Image (cartoon, rainbow, N blue to C red):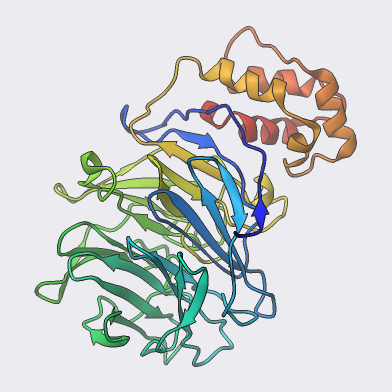
Length: 417
């Protein structure tokens, strides 16, 4: 059995209120954070019942791999047997084949001029196996998705800074362990590139931040049957798609959502933290902005969205610094179709009033003294349910100023923002 890394479960669900959208808007909930914050090589993938996170902080770091069982809300240390040190680098991309395997493009630093490492994790044997190298040098513009239409893996490989500033689109056939180069949608891809298969013959793609001076949301669709691409309406984030940009389709598990793609635009072209979530109607070809995520993503490249047990999860995967808030490792989940809750304020107060000293210390900037003061101030109460009233109650605690009161409120009560 994997080394057990059980993290205390947060029992209360916090439901989010969308600034835009409908009753179907995503309602983000606090989930059990993984053991690690982000790293230069990172990615997350869902299997329908579990999540896997791959991470290397630096190119010299030992690889880390974690499994989250959604039904029990527990994290486990998963095997890295068969992986070299520094396995996961910028552009790490993971895909689940719907059965036994997690496939991994291992990425490359800008200084890695011809890195092509490609591995597969066997969820049954708990071992990693090196497969045939990718047919193109990898980079920050890597992305992968599994297609049940033809039982192949599809990948964007490269970046705007590798192999003469080019990327490749290719298919991997596990039956023969071979790659086939296909028509590419763009000359290159970069930070925030993502792919999602949508249940039939189509694969959707975000290009990512190929121009680091100009915000872009390039979006396209690939027809597996005709081997052709079609440009679509770009993702409408004025700050562009960047680090942490992600696409996910959950129709395989949630048939009523089969017409919807979910997208995270990631950090901005100015490298600012990103909060924005969008949905794309496949039938109408239109975009809608959804509920913001409570904790920002950015800085590190890698997918942040995954699905398990009726929830879409978003892993922050950002640095542990003041700018990125929430410790860099926060995990949030959205119940599909859960909508908003009339009891959200009482749930928020319950979380604040039951929080332990160590839970308060998970909020960036809250050390031993401030955490002890917050525990001593419990229980908190408000006359009117609002973000301002919660922050005012927190501000009454000695040593908690304007910045920290908002940070604490956002951490425990994301549904109020």
